[in-house]
Amino acid sequence: MTSSQITITQPDDWHLHLRDGDALNSVALFTARQFARAIIMPNLNPPVTTVVQAVEYLDQILAAVDGTDFEPLMTLYLTDNTSPDEIIAARKSCFIKALKLYPAGATTNSDAGVTDIRLCDDALEEMQKAGLPLLIHGEVTDPLVDIFDREKVFIETTLQPLMHRFPELKIVFEHITTKEAADFVLQSGDHIAATITPHHLLFNRNAMFQGGLQPHNYCLPVLKRDSHQQALLEIIRSGSNKFFLGTDSAPHAKTKKESACGCAGIFSAHAAIEIYTSIFDQQNALDKLESFASFNGPDFYGLPRNNKTITLIKEDWQIPEEYSLGTETLVPFLAGQTLNWKLAGNSH
Ligand code: NCD
Ligand code: ZN
Image (cartoon, rainbow, N blue to C red; front, top):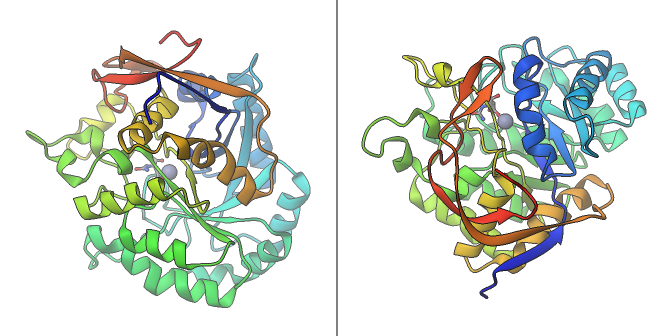
């Protein structure tokens, strides 16, 4: 299928880091100009662990996107001590849509994460009852497990036992990176879904070492080998409704990325829907874009699909080398490169 223009129902981003303070004010509008809603990650410092904190964070985000219709879908950060009462309060709040599981130490700001998922059983029981999804950063943290195997091992050691204990708990396996994760989700029931990032579709681990160390292609879970990238591309070509858009856009200052100990995280909110569209086009799967970007997510969460549409035009434009991030700068995903799809009515 070749086309020079495509109109789809407005998409949502089901996994987004907006940060807070100046950084939030620098990045929020990139998301609001293309997506109607986004699931907001709670890994601030300190993390968003209570409904009260989530309200405060929601207010900050709404101030940053003032003048738009963007709707932040808030999450709470699950800890060893999250009480069933907090889950009940979250359900009653209506604006909290999920809880996020970071295994302690797995990624950026995950120190307060869960040390042993069984400590959360009372909270998980309440989530299962309330129909509140658990969003999982699915990697084990055992330093003895090779970093490229951490997702695969997580499925065996943590995810499967968890699903046995809570057979009706809704789970989103976030930012999947491996064939094992894709197969696992495909074989599971309708209450298990997954998000896929643009970077894990576009790149494999070679991109971290192309011509030298490439810190802006470093994220967690880390990029995997080509066969895994191909498995993810096969998923999007298949049009399975168990997979949906989640950018994992995670801004870090350039100085924190280009450092002796560089932070994990790729910022893609500046061009997310355009990058996904290019990928689907390359895969001859433009007819599958709308369900991935705009239908499968709300259907899984039990939320209405968006009413508005967006139009993308096949037109070359160049991604800037940098954007500002508060008083610092930010190097976006695919900095300086030419993209061949552009959101209509948007001046980059
Ligand atoms: C995220 C961040 O920077 O907050 N980093 C990343 O590499 N994806 C955290 C996360 O989602 O793992
Ligand atoms: Zn993330």
